[in-house]
Image (cartoon, rainbow, N blue to C red; front, top):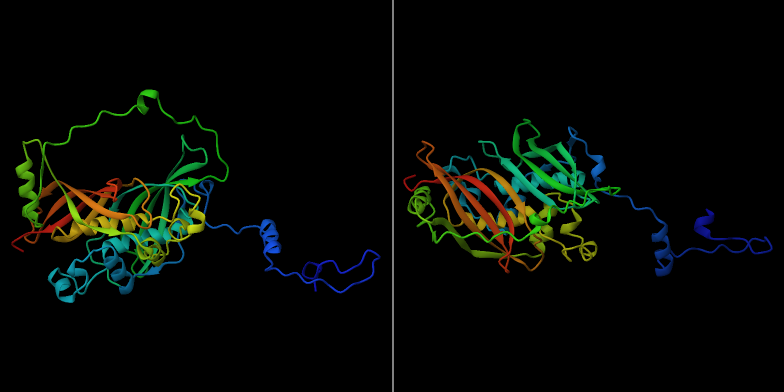
Amino acid sequence: MTRESQGDSRTESGERSEPRSIDWTDTETFARALDRADTREKGNYFEAFAEGDLIEHDPGLTLTQWGNEAWMSQTLNHDPAYWRTDAARERGFDEPPVHPDYLTAATLGITVEDLSEKGGYFLGRTDVRYPGAPVYTGTELRVESEVVSTATSSSRPEYGIVTWRTRGRDAETDDVLCSYERTNMIPRREPVATDGGGGSAAAAEEPDEPDLPSEFVTPDGGAFEDFREALERADDRDAAVAYRHERGRTQDDTTVAGLPLATLNTAKQHHNADVMANSPSGDIVTYGDVTRSTALGHARSDEDTYREVGFDDEQFHTFVTPGDTVYAFTRVLEAEETGRDEAGTVRFEHIAFNQDETPVYSGTRTAEIRKRSS
């Protein structure tokens, strides 16, 4: 037996005595042990990333029917083509496919342990794209990220800024199933001196409040023609095609912790209430892709979505915590014919907001919207 496990086994005179066992579960003893123990850290600091690095994330994830349906149901994405075989076949699918929101969340979730588990602010994501062919459950997703750029944060010396290009691939065919570019603040192992980054005094002044359009136009329905006609009504007038959606979704244990963990998103922000109690949010926070998907679910319930094309300029503006309710607001930016009988292309701006009417997410989305005649 070791001296550590038995304690001091000699008297002052040097004679052996009965060994003292250590009760490692005694509160005071265990506290002293924790103070002396090293912590095996997870995640990477800013210094670990260099432009051009290619990171192959391990493990992968098999996209399951359970995961797909859990994500869709909890974020109120109820498009029947993703639930029912008959509706899927009417849309040209062999069977209900993987929803693009679940695919996006799974692609990002797999990267968290390597890229952002240390924490830091999610600054944005853009160029989110999918293939033309549907993705079906049972597909094994493997993910890689390339470091696009690294930069010093001028305002926060304890952080750096990293941008990655991430690609989720079919492990069998190597086809790219989902790709995007995202930017995060990442903690530095050692803070660096900066110029303070406060900007000029003039830049810090409150900007003039812009005038909103005098009229908001709401489409009559959810078909492509409804969006195009609404834009035509707003054309040459001081008007915008903009409206809010009635549904809201209050954040609970499933949306805040369950859904991200099911996508292998190990960020402590979503499941470690002890650590997050001392953070700026004061509590665990909803995974950004849950907030986004919930807002999109509200929007899609008021439109006849045919196919998702992509997303750009996505930003997360403030924390969403348990008990917060996520609502959605939509602006219609463009509606264009594609020469296809079944659908036309519409570009939206979606804004998620909470019960205090504070924006929590924004982004532009391009989708094919079914025509009335199809």
